[in-house]
Image (cartoon, rainbow, N blue to C red; front, side):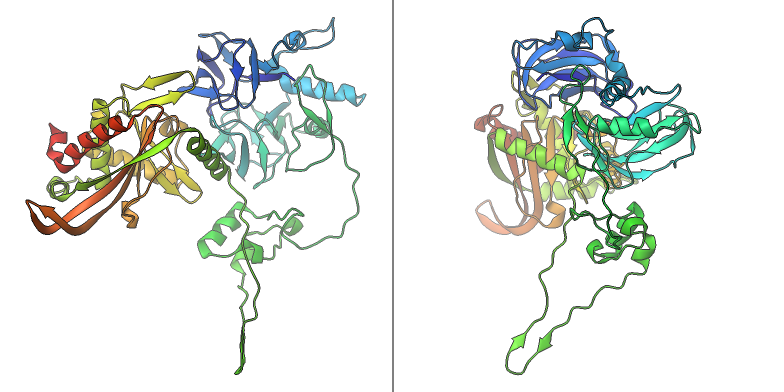
Length: 544
């Protein structure tokens, strides 16, 4: 069945987008993950990938045209499928087309017809859905609500902090009014376009609107119920949730749901992480057994015991483990790395560089007042210069083409509690060593605080992962697609080396270049490393 693809919200402030270029044409076969188009937002031009498979049956916005978020962008379905009803907005003849911008109202009206009710949005009422705050975001988690039901909301006010697959971002309101309804509590996750909140005039009864919206297939709080299909002319494959008769249940003080999920406030969760407390050992005293701040403050860990016999040692204990729900970031990292590992034919080139001159150069450079550079800054600069000499390594692979980048944007992997973020040093070859150092330090701080913007994480043409500071001598990395290569940097190790036929004390560093064989041949990768060796072992050449 055909799927309607609307103009996505690719940034937190995006209200409309321009199709810069279509990478697929009508009639082309589409696989999940294929890049459909390049869309220019208010921040950058971004690639928009398909989450559906099928044939591209219709293009609603031509190259160079601009349209509001949620406007019909394309339709994907089975080859030769009749989509005339979708293009009209209704499968019945004689009715007015339903604009895609009014999808929410259309859903509510359609669901109301199914239930023989007459339900339309009252004047001034706005349904706010889970926004798509990154190009790869499929679901979001409400980290914190900054407004409560009954609060006055002005356009531009921050409604909530939303955890995406990349960062925790502030979500601002584009409407003014009173916050009438909250569809997701703090800590709850939902798919993009699920009901997040309703804003409107104070005192408006929106219970039926919330119920209708949830019946359309965007049921909040991960509840599940039997499903039936909604009118197909509105949203193909949308689902209605039937109401499940309520049953009498006994009240429990457990802090987890039937599927094992823990209910905990964000503050309590943060305090538990700082104190090393396992949440499944904490008894929640909040509503429905929710763990709150006071529970962490008053928590006393259980004491494990063991009994000892003079004849035989017997330990009394139990197998124990912690189950931690995967964050959106962790799930996105897993998906992207698995895709890269199993689609890009990786191969690895290992080298060992003499670091004597680099160490002396760094000492001299840092003797300049108010200047401090790291070995990582030197590696970023050296890679940027080497990539200009070997553009094939600075390339990117797409299904229908290869892109040889003339600019050098280097991603620097930064470890964070939820996984890995890759802020990007733009035009690294044109920046000085102190400029690179300042940028990397700033981005690393933002990454650990989940404050990186999308623009600061996009556009890399090459990636560096450095574990030398942890004492790791050598390792391999998975390519950050669509890039063609990633460099793994190990620790500087003091060891005996042979120079001029003599064994002397020296310092070396091992590096591993992972390459995508579709774009970078073995000889090309080796030549890049030879050029890189020249810059690292004679760093003064980077200043020429």
